[in-house]
Image 1 (cartoon, rainbow, N blue to C red):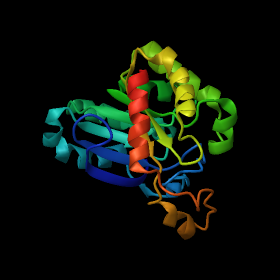
Image 2: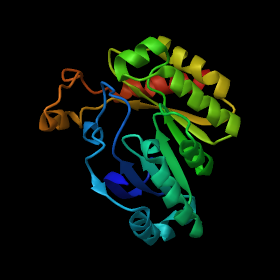
Image 3: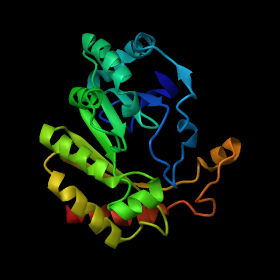
Length: 236
């Protein structure tokens, strides 16, 4: 498995304390991406599922409060076969895992297996329509809808997140459009969380020699994020 980085005690990527495994490669090129260093499928350090399991199992005592492993990225489901191998090892220690995904992946048999085995799926809903999704991420919105439909039909515990970028999708009108997309899947969605765009990853574009489409975009004001999250909460 190609691993970008590991975080031993993550607290924001699922229930309880998590061991976060950030995997390389992503099918999207989001204009606001803060980890462009995960795009390259050939980058990162190679680990076997057994090697990762040996690292993870050391933290098992911290998972007693409902924690576990979170596979993130990049897009973790592009390495679904490796996740499934590691998941089989995690089950021997009764360790739960979550998936933090963009949902823009084909529902192959290995991907379905990885979803079915997860205790939680955290899906990043980038944009709420075909045109904007393609323009700002380069991806296919219909694939995301199929992914969300599969989660709903499977009864999978789901959290949804959306990054809010100043001047792009930071209005109530935009949020109404996101909510309309999610409404048919509301039975499995436990939480819809907004994340503020930040500039902490801007330096990576320079290091990698990449053009940063949002080089002059400021971080989202925390008060504005609070107001928009409050609006979401009242509308649900």
